[in-house]
Image (cartoon, rainbow over all chains, first blue to last red; front, side):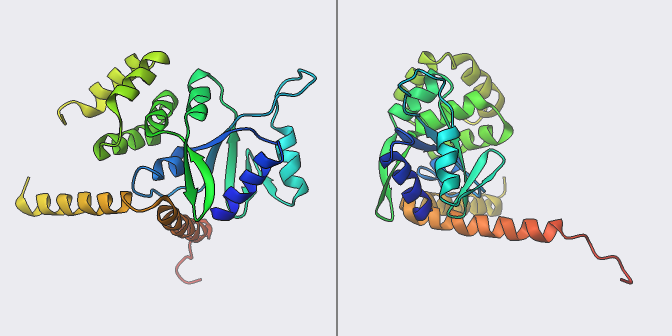
Length: 173
Length: 54
């Protein structure tokens, strides 16, 4: 993973991507016990082009394939890890990226989404494995309730959270 | 819930807390081992099962 992050940092230094934040299961591992995953979700901002053309991931894929990294569907395999680059698709994604926490992996600087944003994104995505991860966060007690409430309110997720609570948290309080 | 089961759950909870408290680097090393195991299991599963007599 260290080597993977070094490549991503180089992409950033070379201006191929802007700010980035690790999300998904690897991001959750920053806060929770490690849970098996086969890929890395990296949320990225893409530099704006001068021509005002639509932002695409093509320059990012070109950069990596020119350096010998192979694509596998929507992933690029970087130093052994399939990495999916995800430009934020809404205000929640933008905010999660902007407020990411800086950390280090074996001396390599990197950024991870806050616990509250990871849970909000998982709630929005809403697959079974996302719900399972949310429960892990709740059980671990790592969420800042005040911050989390504000995120849910800002991004219209209060009703979804209430549904989640009724379904999975009732009777466990 | 029986006392026996309660003890098992408590022990699991403590193990999870201990793992969660590791540094990010240490946790990612564990993640890599978990991934390697998952891939190895996947390779075994993809092989067609041997039939008796073959």
